[in-house]
Image 1 (cartoon, rainbow, N blue to C red):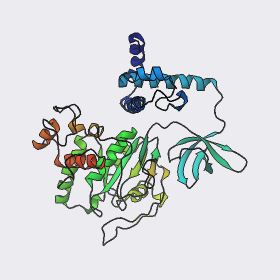
Image 2 (cartoon, one colour; image 1 turned 135 degrees about the vertical axis):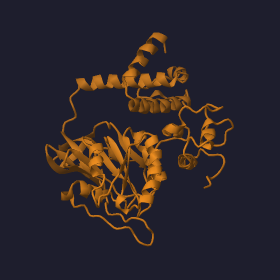
Image 3 (cartoon, helix red, strand yellow; image 1 turned 180 degrees about the vertical axis):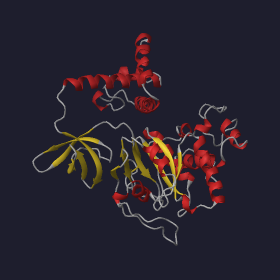
Image 4 (cartoon, rainbow, N blue to C red; image 1 turned 45 degrees about the vertical axis):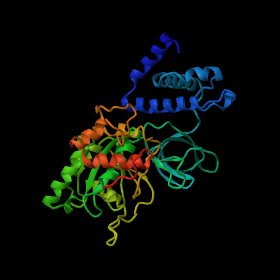
Length: 391
């Protein structure tokens, strides 16, 4: 890429916000990796590393370009496609917002009316998706999904190589935990915060059932939550039973689309009911023997609440896998690691000598729980060399 053209292209990156840059650079890295594995004997039409179909010779040359070059090139290609799209007729259909999803169908709001529509597009829809629906004679049908601004996703529980989008176009991922019954799980909160950041949304730590806390319990919980505050995540301690903290939670969610996520039994649906008693969502008790919650919400649904709140209530989960995050990228989702000097540029902060992150953890500058969580997730991503984490 010529220098003049390179600088002109890269100037366009400065107009993007942090999340847009991160997602664009991630795609650029994938495109460059695809180029590295390109065989010159393949045909141009088999190319899948970028949006255009370069010749084999040009692709060989591009392999040496920097990630910024690749990112700028992808941005330029998207701009060109947007201009072309502006000259073409829009996909026929009615704009609609997906509020819930079922097998092969979805419920969507179009023109103030909620309708059921078949899902005919290849990609699965999710609550929060902006779509276009058309009446094809046999009822409404989704014919287009608009590009998603943000998303919360995980590996599909049945097809782990595929992405399962839980909710789309979110502003906030409210990670609902319980102060007790079931017990607070900070390591699950860590995973949700990473998934929210990956998808471009703000993570919010919301601890329900504050009414079950003794004064001593509150001191312990506050110390646990301070770790998340220090990592830049807003925190709300609430009680759906007594109303404690609900005004603060409302303020954090006002004017935003939020997803309530977390394990079963923490009170996600109870919180929705407390924010809007007219919803009357069914809630369940915690099982006495296991201490785990029962599933009462069976599918995600987008709800309009008083005061301009929009909430996607999701089913409870017991574990949460991370989608499309590599072991090498993981450390970037732990703000406490930033600015630590390591001997090796590709340090995994696990076994390498001269690791600034491990040294900081040893001095107590990085909370023990967060370091433990990082190593556990690193292990799950196949990035550990020392074996299982002991604790």
